[in-house]
Length: 103
Image 1 (tube, rainbow, N blue to C red):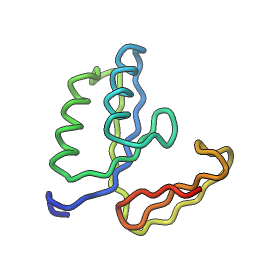
Image 2: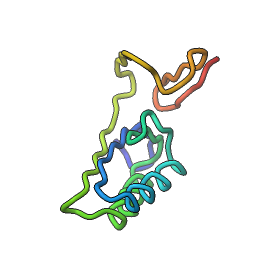
Image 3: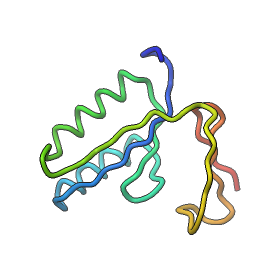
Image 4: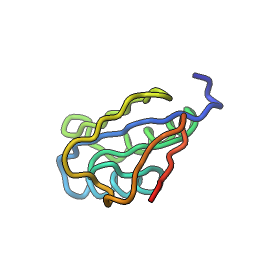
């Protein structure tokens, strides 16, 4: 994928310290959409993603915390089980890399 193309990414984290946890959560809330408390999706160009990851890297403890970033396929299959984060009348889906909300 070229650096100038938008991509859909899934970021998940497990942060040991409450202060660091809050800081990472605040940074990601500005850039992405929470899917679960410690899981976010972001739509951005690769260069912007790398800057975001560098910012998060400055906030975490490398031996105690775990942050993972996965690029999601444009037309990936999604299965939802159990209680969803969004109300019943709101659906989250992707048409390529753009996240859409329907109600």
